[in-house]
Image (cartoon, rainbow, N blue to C red):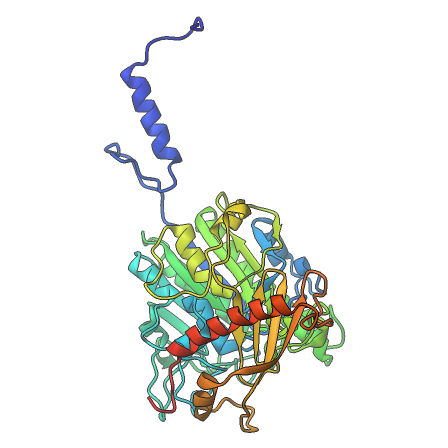
Amino acid sequence: MKSPTSRPIHWIDLLCLATLACLFSQSGFCAQPLENAQPLKKPNVVILLADDLGFQDIGCYGGPVKTPTLDALASKGTRFRQFYSGCAVCSPSRATLMTGRHHIRTGVYSWIHDPSQKSHLLLREVTLAEVLKAAGYATAHVGKWHLGLPTPEHAKPTPDQHGFDHWFATWNNAEPSHRNPGNFIRNGKPVGRIEGYSCQIVADEAIRWLEQRKAEPEPFFLNVWFHEPHAPIAAPDSIVRDYGSVQNRAAIYSGTIDNTDKAIERLLQKLQKLGVTDNTLIIYASDNGSYRDDRTGGLRGRKGLNWEGGIRVPGIFVWPGVIQSNVVSSTPAGLVDVMPTICGLLGLAEPDRHLDGTNLTPILKGQPGAWQRKQPLFWHLQKSRPVVAMRDGDYSLVAEPDYELSKDNMFQEAWIAKIRSGGYRNFQMFNLSKDPQQMNDIAAENPALLEELKSKLLKINRSIMQEAHDWATQ
């Protein structure tokens, strides 16, 4: 039965329906676009990475530091309760972030000391900057790099050879501290001493780069890697006093994080002034856990160790209108997932090689039931005890090496042969849903599950070591 207002479908109706279909399509393109129709702009991408920031440092993770900017950012997107670094120390974690691959596949075994090591992020790797540059993005890296820079002893690639149009970086830490650092390099040229604090200097560079290209039509990828709160630490006394004496190390540590929150605020304000906030994907995380036991949320271990305290970090994803807002996810995720997730969110093809991470897009868009991790999370750090760790669902499996290394604390490339061929012993297993502090080893009472998890761990390990580059012989 027709309603009184019904009428035959007219060609104008069909045109309206086609226009609506175009507007609501995910790609922003019609199959046959109208002459004046404009495609939706590709989103900008901003990654904010802290250095040695613990799982429980910032406000929205229950930490003691006042971080209103980060707390507000988290409320606009999805925050992960169980987010993981790529490694328990910095260089390998950054390699994993940039590639979506386990760091040993990329040539990075531990933190890189450029003068004494040949190690660096291999040029054969496809970085996130290269993926986005190929998709028409302008790219910039500002802040700590620590994936290898050339020295008189060793020729190594620079960030522009990994896909960045512009770079402003330090090889490792800000020196002599976060205050008035003198070791920044801009596009291959040393800058010299800069007045101010590292996080604000890094934000200044990012803001200048955005300002210089504000009229450019292409989208941008801005990779912002802060030095704070990695030692040697420094922050303005006026901020430190909010947390204790200006001589108190814990207060200074907190002050560096507070100061970074203020630097991020300025950067976000610039995005707002440029009118790009609503079309920008922002990811915030840390490269590894804190070196302070009081900032790991009671988790076992700290930076440098493959216990939860060394590898669990904050993880926040924001893209207004695309990623769900004010959501806290309990799904385990990590830096290894960033590459496939950005590719998934932006509709880009993943690099044609094995990625160890999994695309988190269904979770971020509110469809966790449609998501499944393709491979358990896996960590390896040769001087850590345990040397390996794996997260599969609720379960954590860790183990010791069945080989001995020399007493050196710094990574030695002569160890690589042993690392590649060595095995593991003394497996321990924990149910993290019941025992997040990893105090109750349940391996002996669950032999079948232990063997299942061991088989998965050894399979991942074999795959990684088959791709591992031997710097001692090549």
